[in-house]
Image 1 (tube, rainbow, N blue to C red):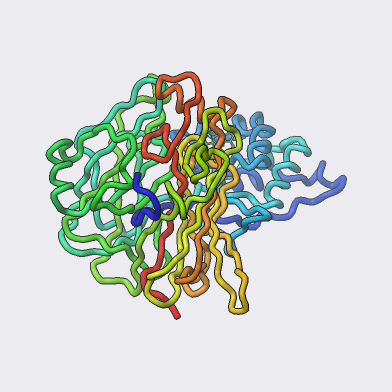
Image 2 (cartoon, rainbow, N blue to C red):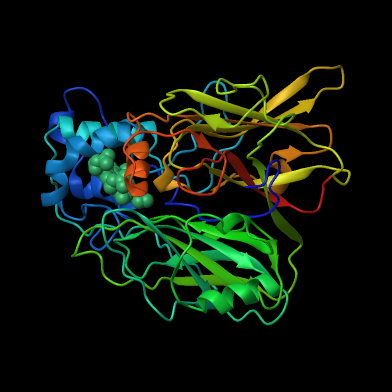
Length: 464
Ligand code: HEC
């Protein structure tokens, strides 16, 4: 992995609809008689926030579509919601880092919605009068213009997660602008997440096609994001809304671009390990939108001065090394911005990225103040990283109100890691690598290397 700022990539996916009003639960004794019911209150709430995954054929282990299944699981559901484990949504505000804007398509339940679930349980999980349960939010991208799918499906086996790539040809014959992306999993039971990388025409692409063919599976554990001539198009997560840009904003995609699709497969046993051929749908516009965007990553600093000293340094010089067994190991980096065109660059999407050992990640920006000192702004904060649920978060704000960076600002990226056997992801990574004890972990692209990246979608035209 190259040090310092890795230019290029990402974007993707939003998720379930935002919190919809769900009447405040009554309090007091009346609850026993008039408390919430399954059909009237609870099922519509779960349809909106949970059933994009917890439905028949969805990725989640159980369906919530019937009272008979959901009612006995109610306490477990409440616990998962209260603990923040469900729905999967890792970008959270904390006292020391809280972004200015809410996130678009935030799947999480509001406090009053959680209270509704609590009240339903407390009042005996009443079924109420049978009624149709609303459909979960549609996850289909509209106005799809280009589509591509593997010619040779892949069947995942064994118990270890697998990373498999396909080079796909969506048939981009002229310069176009990407405004929406989705993946339709062929076998939703095993597709855990998908990274879509645009691969520009050229010698590297030709060599890759000669080696791997088009539409055929090949192993590609790592390296997808940092290949030459590539740019991130999207990251797809199960149960999420398709990625769509806000307003008139598009990513330029040159003629001849192919899509490198990296599948993260999570094998589930003989009954679910059926062949997968997932489809990529793109919405490419043929006229240039008012604004274009680019994707830039900040982080992954390997050396001073951007990498700051930390606990693993052995020689007095900053070193990105997470010692075997370290439980609260921090790597911090500072990237002063200079040499950008004048004006402010607006950030509209954030995609935090680490590997298995990561625990926390935050990206902040320091804006210098006129009279001296700095104003610190939180761009994204992930207090509990979960490798399985990485995704792109979009700020819910018009372009003019988005967080901005400009010359003179400093980006601060901070990651913490738990490289001990207490971290279930360490156990999983070691098992996949055929190891039993943690090893020293360094910056790199393989599963047992680490990263510390904030990847951002940036509106290209600076604003005054
Ligand atoms: C984006 C897909 C998705 C959404 C949305 C989702 N779940 Fe899950 N859920 C899963 C998956 C997958 C699992 C299996 C464990 C895992 O992979 O984390 C799971 C597991 C669970 C479990 C088992 C215990 C646990 O914590 O692992 C409960 C309970 C649960 N979900 C409740 C909910 C509730 C309640 C909602 C809505 C408020 C919800 N889930 C929304 C995908 C989802």
